[in-house]
Amino acid sequence: MYNVPTPANCHRWDLVETPDCPLCGQRGTLQHILTSCHVALSQGRYTWRHNQVLRELTGVLEKERKSVRSCQPRSKHTQTSRSEKSTGIISQTAGDWRLEVDLNQRLTFPDIVPTNLRPDMVLWSPGTKKDIIIIELTVPWEERCSEAHERKRAKYEALLTECREQGWHTWNYPVEVGCRGFPGGRL
Ligand SMILES: [Zn+2]
Image (cartoon, rainbow, N blue to C red; front, side):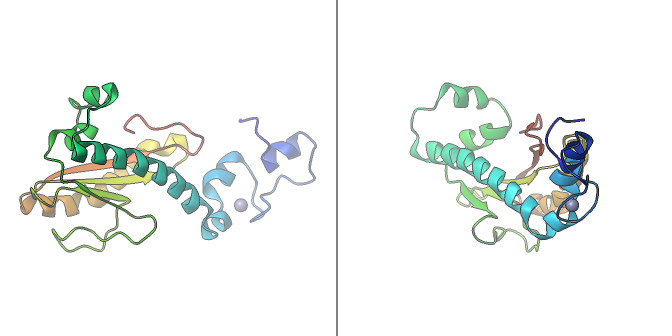
């Protein structure tokens, strides 16, 4: 039980007449308000939240991409991560990375294989025709992070297999930021 003023809690505390969600009339628990209300979903509220987080992630990756491109001295943090698999991929390559994000305009998957799939982010190196990274963000109820991770990983696996058959190295990165604010370990 989280002590936040959801309709269900406010009703329990005798502050309001009804425990119901003001949008749909179902019981207004925290989980309902944050992840399960079909009216909130249809109004685009969960998409808005997802895109706010995606914007933050984009800022971080864009900074990393530009720092590689301009070959400026890297921060201590980046040097540390160079040996890792995540941003390390960007740091270790020639620096012709392109970044497409499904935010302000509809993402078009790079011209490697035809697909209708639109991941949240694609990073690829068109010059070397070598590396492609797919990043898919989910903002789930914390307890469902693993489930979301596996679902998103599976969704893009066939597409990445096709890219590999064209000679590309591929990385499939589903990332989760829980809707109560706890980033998943993979982030
Ligand atoms: Zn509702």
